[in-house]
Length: 173
Image (cartoon, rainbow, N blue to C red):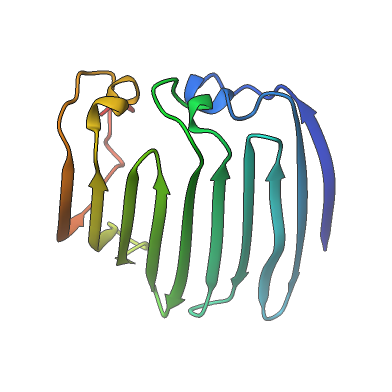
């Protein structure tokens, strides 16, 4: 069993977009246990005035499930061109060797909803997804994209991609 309660002041990861939401006092709580049936993450929280991350998981061979919710109080901490709160929720369930997931997020006049499957984790992962993204003003995201953006988007993407990141030479898209 693991029970951890801690705090940190002004955490920095060297990523400006994340460092802004880690400023100040951040509390960490972790509760987990393991037995012959699997591993349970009953509580993982990371909290400060800007950030609220909650996660739980029940990890068992072939029948795992997990849930995480990230809330940012003011997205201007991520990028000055953004404002207001943002929330992302991910729910995942393992069935045999495949994972099914649902994703929902909103903030800065953007909505994202999707679901899909992640398979082949023992070899080359395959991701299949159906995702809808609506954004009224892409220009607000120019700073995050590190390039000029304009217009709006309301798009649904359905597809499958086979990934192999073992030979990836760069971490920048």
